[in-house]
Length: 280
Image 1 (tube, one colour):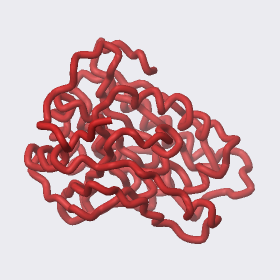
Image 2 (cartoon, helix red, strand yellow):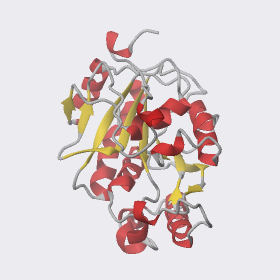
Image 3 (tube, one colour):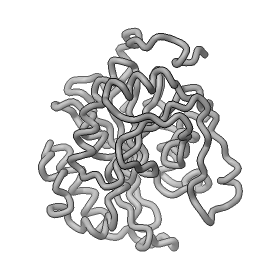
């Protein structure tokens, strides 16, 4: 395979089956890789992989890389960052040997006006979904950080700048969590907490009805917002994906399950209106 960084960036060849519409995925716990009997695991190793076929490169927006200003990684060698603690050694032994695409990443940084980092690798919000969905690691991957103190509107506006990436054959995947309250997790995995489903259903309903104002004001309007997200960080990638969608997007709910009682594993794709959903 020819590395994308070795060529002058250009648009991909026309491919009617290829979609470059942005995705939002909930990456879940690091244990997702080890727990191989969950609906979310099946989604990652099956359906998600089909959404990656044919893309030139992947820009991951992970909740686990936060900076004061938006930054794109331009590293050629992508370190597998094990940024989690207290898990089985087998998870720390995992490596995802995807390459970056420095020239393409630099072009995108210049295009959207963000900083670059030539040493940043892939945190677990980026490599964990991909090690399941694309174990061959044959697609160049690089990351865009979220803002340490950014609002939903800040991230929505950042996402709008990414709409031009489709012309370069680059797929935007925003990796966070639809609900993320680590203190509330039920490791005994009893019934799903109603607050989690009510929050998630509200978010999905507002996405499908294009109620952007309500989504941007989720803290004040969504039921159980504080319970679902004691902190904003894991929901901010969602707003990047929402901004990267076209104004007339059609939202497809790709996956909807829960782990540990209230950890929503929601995945959405924001298709262009009328686009052939060959991967849905």
